[in-house]
Amino acid sequence: MFCDNVTIKLTAGKGGDGLVSFLHEKYREKGGPDGGNGGKGGSIFIVTDVSTNTLYDYKTKSRLKADNGENGKRRAKAGVGADDLYIKVPVGTVVYDEETNERIFDLTGEKQAVLVVRGGDGGYGNAHFISSVRQAPQVAEIGEKGEEKTVRLEMKLIADVGLVGLPNVGKSTLLSVVSAAKPKIANYPFTTLVPNLGVVDGPRFGIEGFSFIIADIPGLIEGASEGRGLGDDFLRHVERTRVLVHIIDSMSQDFVKDFDDINKELKAFNEDLIQKPQIVVLSKADLSVDFSENLKSLKTHLKKVKKIQIINQEPIVISAPTHQGIKELMSVVAKTLKDYHPEEVVMTAEDYKVFTPADLVGDKPSVKKEGDKFIVTGAKIEKFARKTDFNNPHAKARFIDIMKKTGVLKELEKKGAKPSSEIEVSGKKFKL
Image 1 (cartoon, rainbow, N blue to C red):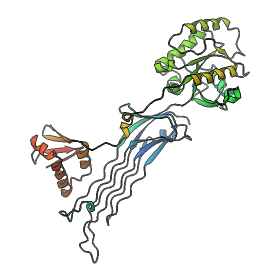
Image 2 (image 1 turned 90 degrees about the vertical axis):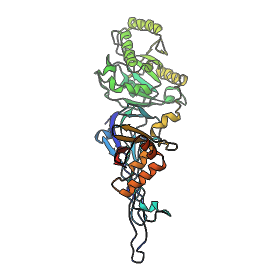
Image 3 (image 1 turned 135 degrees about the vertical axis):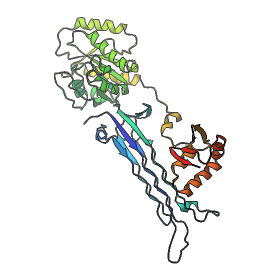
Image 4 (image 1 turned 180 degrees about the vertical axis):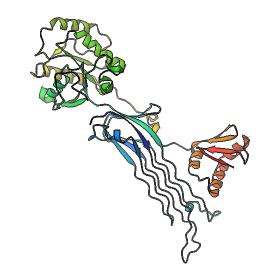
């Protein structure tokens, strides 16, 4: 079933906890600490898959979670890291942060992958903390919690040419004639309920060495950009196309109004849409009566249009069933595609910032007093706090030692912190 817009909550896996353990064997009573490290939690990637053409699977799977890493084991054996989770989406899917509406990534190519939420790191077991001055450490780290994010996935068809026009003007019939696509065709409005794609084989129409993809967009009506009819759901698919074939029914009573109504909705949805090259076509020539006066008015109007890039001020008259004008239309489309190339989008390092691991080097912690509470922030110190079990006095003592070495403890004392003061780091509260 076709679906081009879903919202899903993604939760990466938690890292496994480190283990506090001491080796006890028959002839090795004092074998020493042997607690292993926890495994890393699974991350979640969104990847493009050419065999996928809908987001429907995620209508019923609105919450996805990667597996947690295993806890550390005895004999200094590390827990197994969890497998990463890969979410397959169609090429042309845009990933948004649902909370901020920020675009995370635009997946326009095959075999692209984007890391959306990272799995938590596993905690160190007590075997990791052995040193010359600490022969029997009784401290281990908690596995770090995985990231969470609610994302919105929007699929936008990637096609060279988009067929636009009012309902029942013959878009689906044209698509079925110029390609192998089999859209639903009937003599009533809104026959097309979802966009359809077809590949036009150039040589078939005398265009050697050139083929292109054409999309039939469901009919637009006045107010489509505001949600009337089906247009609001599918106007986004027009954004991907390079050239628009604007079809007007030759049996209409007012060609100019039909032309203006469609462009008004395109502009209201996204002003960039009317900047795309438009090829104006009159359909159903085999059924219509004399439309010469209407055509004359349209030609006069097209000459006056300034902000729309009209390729042909002499509309191409076609009849899809009888193939009248089809070869001419395909030739004009092919030439226009060759003449108008979209600007190349250059991605910078800033565009990838959302899903690049945080750089902790040079991170300086800070202390802020709120009432009787002291809040400590800083990526590195917060990471240590998330992995500390403050119910374990040895782990708590280690964390306070880390604060001392990083200057946090001194800063707390400057701000007036006392042993009885409440300290908060990354949501965890404790007293010195």
